[in-house]
Amino acid sequence: MPRYLLKFALCLLLAGFSGGVFAQTRAWLDRDSVRAGETVTLNVESDGNVGGGPDYSPLYEDFEPLDSKSSTRIEPGNGGMVARSRYVLTLRPKRSGRLTVAALRVGGVYTKPLNLYVEPEPADTQPAIASSAQVFVEVVPDDESPYVQQAVGWLVRLYSSVPIVGGKLDQPVPDGASLMKIGDDAQYERNIGGNTYTVVERRYLLVPERSGRMSVPPAAFDGRSAPSLIDQLVGGGGDPQHARSKSRVLNVRPVPANAPQPWLPLRSLDLRYRTTPQQLRMGNAASVVVEATVDGASLAQLPELQLPPIDGVQVFAEPVQADEGFTGGRPRVKLTRKFSLVPAREGPVHLDGLRLDWWDVAAGTARSASLPALNWTVTPASGAATGATGMARATGQAADAAGGDGNAASGAVGASGAATSGGTGWAVAAVLFALLWLATLLWALHLRAQPRAFAAAKPAAQQTAGTEAAALTLNLPALRQLIDVGDFDHIASVLRGLARPPARDDDELIERLADPGQREAVQALRRARWGGGDGVAARTALRAAFAKAPQWRQAQGEAASPLAPLYPVRK
Image 1 (tube, rainbow, N blue to C red):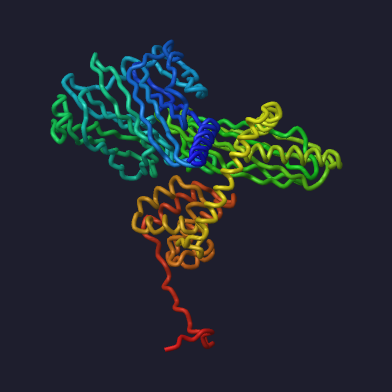
Image 2: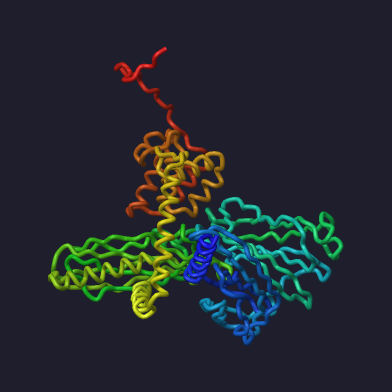
């Protein structure tokens, strides 16, 4: 009996130690910008045992807290089940301008500060409604005279002064445009004419595909409300509610004759270097990190960030990191890409600055964003320098593997010092972790011995593409959405998976497609994937070609083998 108690105590100690190590806390807002008089929702989520909820007192100077709630759920996590707690607080800003949501203490950790922009609301922006209206719908485009293929932010707001217990909010797609929902719905409160309305805001991305007059159908809400507490408790009752927005007309302008190609209509575009190396040395890799901040476009509409070729230097590009948002009623995106430079010879090398041409939709003129050129002199690698650089690179890789920017390495040093001075406490922890590792190994060996239905013939990526392709075969709108927002590698993988059996590569995909337009669209996709083609034109060709299901060539039956079977079946 004492042995079991000792094991139980060790498990509790290890669980408590692990919970403190792996606990994570984060905070975020449902919107980055609001208008004066509106509310914003602050979410705080914490994993593990943090010993209580957040301390909201640092927020009271700039915000008025209105409503708070919390919930806890148990989910699988690292090393077992994890208790994840979420705290939700509704805030009303006390003033306009740029505000900072202060860092909040949750247990023994702090969240990161958050930025919020509160724009003053002019008197003429109040929606025109009847004084007796309990539910109404408003649509707000960020541009009523956009250009062809310009990303238009389209907001649909449902206002309700009574509780809504069910219903459907819908925005029909206009002819000659694509419409895609962006992100999750935002919910807040707004005061109009002395009445408080609950607002549900839904965001869309509208992209006109042809110029001329475009009529957008009204957004509609059909549901029911429960004005009394009894109706809310009983459920299924309530008063029916129906609301329609006003029809909107957009005057879509054509591509100007003097516009740069590829066509890129934006509000703003800024380029900058986040990291540049001071020197280049033979045998060592250096990093250049480029950041692009774009206002008025989604990720799918932007060209690929790519450095110009560098004579005498090999350039290896990592995948683009994108942070997409919806601010001020329109889409915004920040792109970050890291390039590794590996010198192939000694001497001077030159990097031409990256340049992107775009069209300013507000000013109606062509603009260009560029980065300055960079020059280095590649020095030879010395033995001592090579060894030191290798050690630094190994340390950096270890830090990257730990998910940090060098903090992991410093954390390791701190842990080493603590182990030296901590005595037997850390020794016991090391033994416990060794026992946990041994138990995990035995568990893994046990699972390996169990028969499992692994699909060994298909790699995981091929199975995923095949599953998505099977779903998209019967769902052309989903395929269209993938073409609009997916990256080129993903689109190519799914198109290959649409074939039965899946195509091994792009050449086989093109060979098996029967429709000439679809074959040419895949060729355009391939050119865009490898940097030699126009990404916007490739997506346009794919949308047109795959508006219908893929057309396949008639499969040829396999010829019978002239050889006798190696293992004949006995009857």
